[in-house]
Image 1: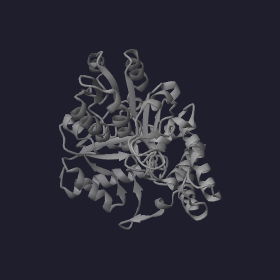
Image 2: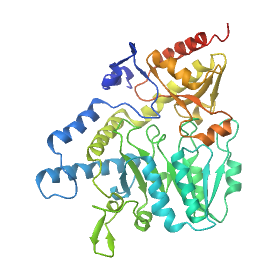
Image 3: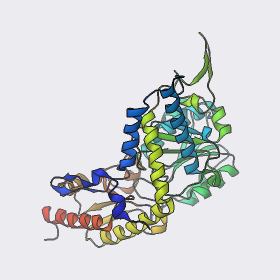
Image 4: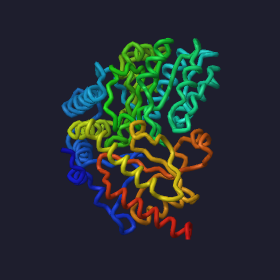
Length: 410
């Protein structure tokens, strides 16, 4: 049975006090907190088998390499990939998307080719394609939203053409919480022989996902948004695609042979992992996956749905609040963005912080979406495995203090 109060005991930081108040951490879309098992696994690596991987023939190097590759297999199993060689370690979702843009896009996209994005994309899934568009003359198309915060699928269908080569789309909006219909989009794309890249940064931590069933071509996500360390990301792609891609970084570890004028790349996935990787981060990520597997991703998803429904109900009871994204709980994740009483989001967040509550305020690296919504910034609450209804109650009480401080409704 999912016992959130028992789970909370595994996270040392949740016992901290902020401004004399018990920490209420509601910024999980930015980064999640780490259970003690993840912290200990990272420390254990440095204490007992710190060595570089894939290099030394001595015992410590062999142990480090074995553990590093064991985690690669664990990641593959977590997302239903058929082989671990299709898992590339990066420093985050951003680097993984850039690897696709430059390693695949520079090689295969030409003047006149189209890349379809959505207006809800994180900057990480916009800027690399803008750079490539300037270099290669490719055309970017953006799918707009319906009034309810879901994708305008009619516009999506009408945007596709014989020139469409890639559809790059977020699994879950980091502002609206919208869960996009990935399965449908993949089928449409493959019907016209286009590839699909999924930015899974906000989806993989919460939604049980099988890449084989979805048939996605690329999937990018980050460890730190799913209880793991910062500085670790994943790019999954199909073997035949990875075999054709060029490396993003040149240097040590990513080669088979280097001569004065030419080099031969290493086999996949190592050709994409130039330089010394974040070994401790990978080890910690393995523990984070174990932790989520022990909870059960179905249970994680269910817990978030219950919390999200409660948070939406409580927030909606406040006068003067505007909540963005789908009202249908089945169409959204545990990310909730809002504006309150015409108070600037930074002011709202500052007052909440005085009460020990951590939320995000700003444009959330999604300025085009905020422009489309007609706002410059918003407040964002994002819930995860250790959050409780009592914490949502604390949020509501603190928002009521915001009203009093700014003298609205008096």
